[in-house]
Image (cartoon, rainbow, N blue to C red; front, side, top):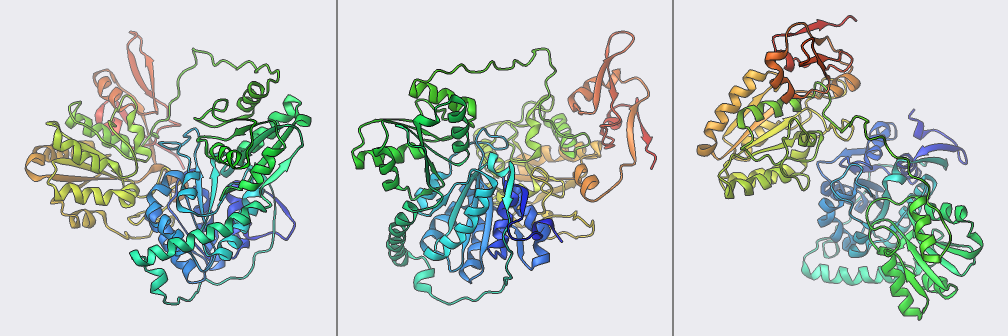
Length: 619
């Protein structure tokens, strides 16, 4: 039995924030879970995928976040509690469904977990998704700890059913990926089977229905306003004349900062856990007892704006500040908060001496793994198309092709953008345009861009990097998976058929680890690009980490330098494998040696240099 399915009421476990969310959903009787993986939320769907069969739950790796919201809301309409999770940029994709779902509502509880990523640990932006709750008009909960995450998920389902509305659980990376003690409850029996009552005048949102539902949503928000004023997740600590308002993990930094500055007897802290609707009366009452108030929050001044509105309504004349003292970009920490408190309240504070990193330490940027087929693809494309081509890229491991020596990324804005932007570049430039997109990302949001490029006869080459898994977020499946955890699952959606169905005539499939064949096909496609419009090269080779760690495939060979690498030195330098070690030979010239511990056995280097030979590994 999966460990998250065990344990008795009152027992404490040391859980990851994402694990606490899973346990809370289980204790709430959730039986339908859908998500597209995205850090820092990926462990939620992965955890459910591991335990779902044991409890009869439907666990869906959706093709994208919009689909996850749509499938999960259908289950909730049928009386089955549901959950979907995503990272912050995923809610952009799901927003079309999310906004109207707030009108339509749900019959059973539905919680949407949206994991923001301050400091962009694994994201292309650090948008503040609290504004989505305000824009959609749905209740929002913000946990600070794994225990709060669990408590808020359970409360979220009750709130969702009481008001017939989805609830947004807004987390951040430090909550999703921290560990803490969590008190367990009981996991009830629940069924995946529901029932549906036809009610088109409330469920089919044409304009006349939408107008009526909007008014109903406003009524719900009025009732939720009373709910938030008495929410147990909104608390006040301390009675001093200096006020601090904070939510989520920022409230933990505040508590530490106040203790370490020794000002607890002078400070009152309003810690908000339910942050939409905004508890205006609670804030106004808090302000009435304060001389000055500092709002401490990460990213945008969401709470600061709410506090200023409440202050205007209640006639507060004291000083209010926020982003004048608290950074608007990146994560907060206790030091940053202490600096803000000391400046605002005039408290003496000497910042600690920052440990200086020695300048002579070697740089270790993120890089493609040794043996990664994407490296071979990039190498061959650059050999054929060179520096002249423009290379739009996309979201995935292959985005690391940005770095030297590959330098195979010229433009990126979001999931699926490589295909669409390639169409734009190709129309206004007299240069070759070669776009890159991974298999999972293509299914997520690349198909429409490809159809658009075909229908407008754009002259471009799309290189579809098919490694048989969603590698960057932890080897999750996708609709075109051709490698499964048991190694037997056939294709679900064949990429070649799908691409041809989009209208592409010139389609080829290569194994990028076969360097000469790949470059020959690329030369042919380059020559045909001006006459054939969109061409697609499917570069297919499995992710080696997936093969070894998940499928258990054994590596048979590594490669070693047994001859002279100097004639091929330039080619090897352009390949830039992370298993290469550059050392001077007897004449002082740089030569390649291969770290056999890192070598992935892909053989690409041996195809470029006669001085590199295979070495069999013993079992």
